[in-house]
Length: 107
View 1 (cartoon, rainbow, N blue to C red):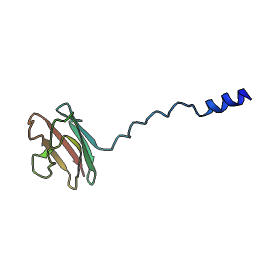
View 2: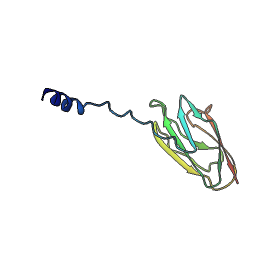
View 3: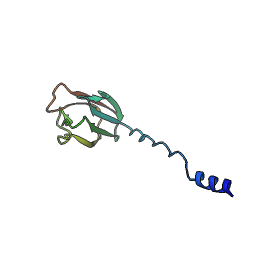
View 4: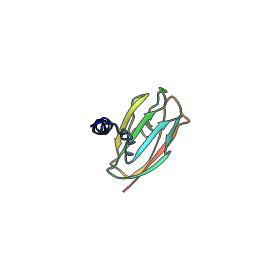
């Protein structure tokens, strides 16, 4: 009887499942450590690029040099833009002009 009690007591004790890291988002650029990573990304026409803002409370934005897209100034969250025309799109961060990136859109 005692062994049944011990077994019943221990049967509910198991290690919790390790948390799975979120799956990477296709065509994602991370905004962290005052950089865009990757600094250059290649996508196809119709693809959406997601910028993930994660720089410890430092505010950044994503501003296309040709003014075709612009995110708000953010400390966290995401910004997305769908590219409908082929070309090379350069962008920068308004408060940190040394932060620059490129999206190459293939037709």
